[in-house]
Length: 130
Image (cartoon, rainbow, N blue to C red):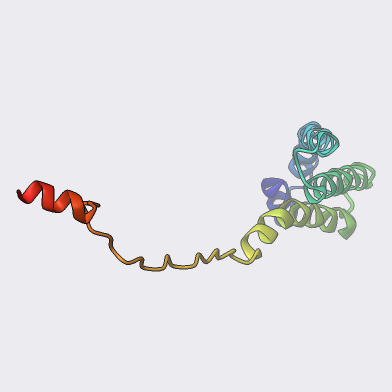
């Protein structure tokens, strides 16, 4: 998607169209896997939503770009849809980086009085000495 966006901004509309069309099956697979993982309880809602939104934006970009008149400039909606798809894919990464660090503090152990290494009764001490 990044290469398609770069090609679209440089002016290579045909290359951007083909890269967008090639990205649709991969984006669909990622969205289907994210939704199935969500249904199984393995993943979060954010991954399923962002992958589905990215797929929708890629389809919109490809539809707008392929329906543009030959020789005419491509509507800005195609470029904006590509940018929105890239942003949708980057949301989970940004959220992960901005997640606060969880610091777990443990209470220090109290120092216990040391007991003698040998625990003998006074009677046993005298018996040993004799």
